[in-house]
Image (cartoon, rainbow, N blue to C red; front, side, top):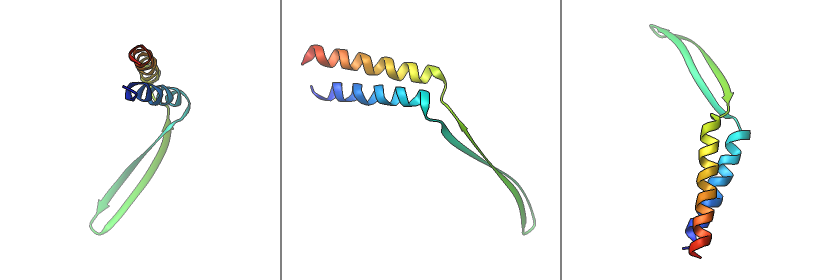
Length: 71
């Protein structure tokens, strides 16, 4: 079962990136009157909640521990 440690490494990396890398988000706000459309596009970058990163890191560590026990 070499797949479990690999999954653990991937989860650990995603968890650490969740603390550092912001996720871009864009919204379109507009009004259409007849053939004319007036709109504004807003873009924001927000980090994921810390709980998401903690869960991903914990899952990665757990998978690494379980993978090393079976190997």
